[in-house]
Length: 352
Image (tube, rainbow, N blue to C red; front, side):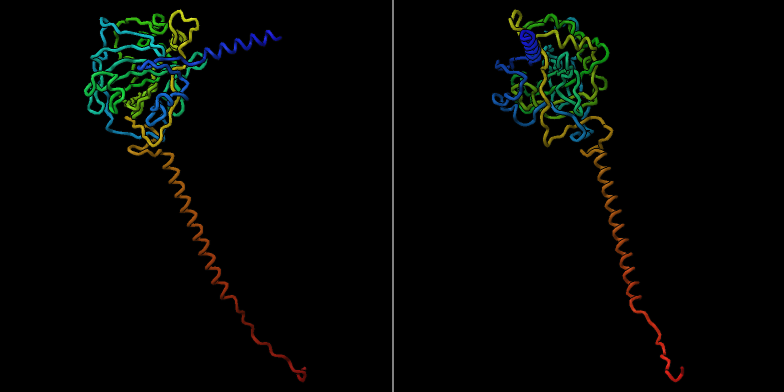
C-alpha cells in the first residue's frame, strides 16, 4: 500500500513538472519563466501601463474609418533564399529578410525582423495570448517589425514609443494548413534550445488569414520581459486553421533545454496571461454587429437606456393621471358635503 502511494506521488510530481512553463532568455541574457508574478520585480515595465496581451471585447471596441488595409512589401520570399529557423529556448523563431516590410502605419515603414508562435499544451490546447470576448484560441503567430524609418535595428527601436509593430494571427484547430507546414515540417531539426535550420523561403503572406483588412488596433507592449510598452498591435479579426496533428506537433516537438540536458523540459504554455486594459480603446477597421460606428457604446446599452426612458415616461404619466383623478374626486366630494332637507311641520294636538 505504501509503495503504491509513493509510486502515485512520483507520477503526479512528474506530471506537474512536465506542465511547468519554459525557462527562457530574453535579449539581455537574464532568465525568466512564464510564472509572471515575479516579472515586475526585475522588469518594472511588466507591472506598468499599456501591457499586452488583452481581451478584445465589445465594451472597448470603436470603429475607425481611417484604418486602411496594410501593404505587405517583399513578403513573397523566393525559395532560393534561405531563412533561419531557430529554437531560442522559449519559442520557435523564423528570422526574416531585410527587404520585408509593411506600410500604412503612422506614415512610417516597418521592417520585418522575425516571426514566432505561442501555444498551450496537448492537454489544454488553448495557448493564444490575445483572447476575443474571453475566448482563447489554440495558438498565436506574431510577426515582429521595427520602425526602419527612424531606427537602425530592432534592438534600438525596442524601447522607443513608436519603435515596434507586431502583426498577430489567431490560430484555431481545423483543416490542414500547407503554408504553416512549411515551418512545422522542420520542427524536428530545431528540437532543442540553440539548434538552427535553414529552410527555403516561401510567401509569408500565406500565413495571414482571409480578409486581412479586418483587424483590431491598439497600443500595447511586448508580451515577454522587459515588456516595453512600445508596440503598435494589429490583431487580425479572422483566425487561420491548422490541423489537430499540426497543433500536436507544435505542442510536443520542442524543448526549452539544450540537447543532452539530463532534465529535458518540454516547450509548452509559452503565452502570457491577459492584462488589464483600463481607460483605453481598441480601434477596429470593420463594422461589427452590435457596435455603433464612431462610438464606444453597444446597441445593447443604447436599447437599455431607451427602455429605461420609456418606462420613466410611463410612470410619470401614470402618476399624473392618478393625481388628476384624485383632485377631481376631491372637488366632487366638497359639493356633496351639505345635504338640504325641507322642514317638516309638527301636527298640533287639536288637529288630532
